[in-house]
Image 1 (cartoon, rainbow, N blue to C red):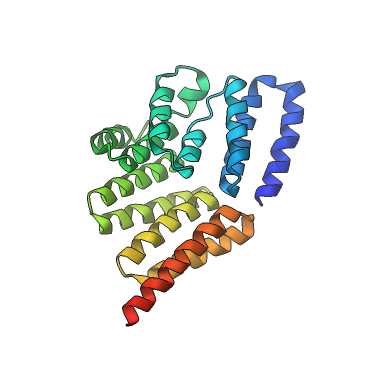
Image 2: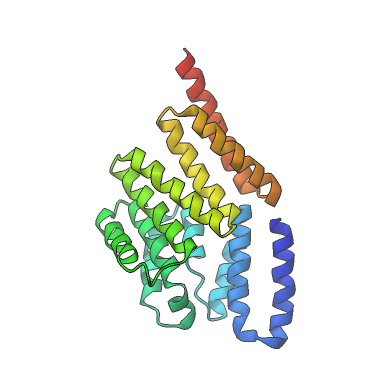
Length: 233
């Protein structure tokens, strides 16, 4: 569960203070990711700020937090600034930052920038072979296709993202992709497909004890119920 993960990271922080203080910033970043997954936005922001104060780049988690808070423009600017950095934490996570940037660029209607970053990621597959980066790239392509009203293609990309996240056992990220997929399926009047996706998300939310996933799932279930009722009239 997320609470168990939080306890493990806090225990690691106590140990790192003695054994590897240089890595504390990364542990704080991970703690921020855990709080973000749970929906504890204030805690997540405090963690990311602490990671930055410790000399660590908190991206792309901080940008995802800003998206969650409705600050998409700030998220885009922060990711662009992060890419300028040459420190090891930034270079080590460059693929994740790029893929998240493409997603945020599409979300903020910077479609050309989104295409540019996606092309950089897809034309260098040997440089970015990780399933996580491929999953995020698929999510970015889905965002771009949604803006271009290519919803069926967006559905396909989100299915790819779910598959990639499942490859590495990242249940929460897969659940987030499924939520986006369910939202699209509702818009396409595929109510059965949306119901299946939401059922899977609900099981994951309960397993990891994520209030954020539960809330988003309930919100889409209400939307689905309304769409189903309207279709039946």
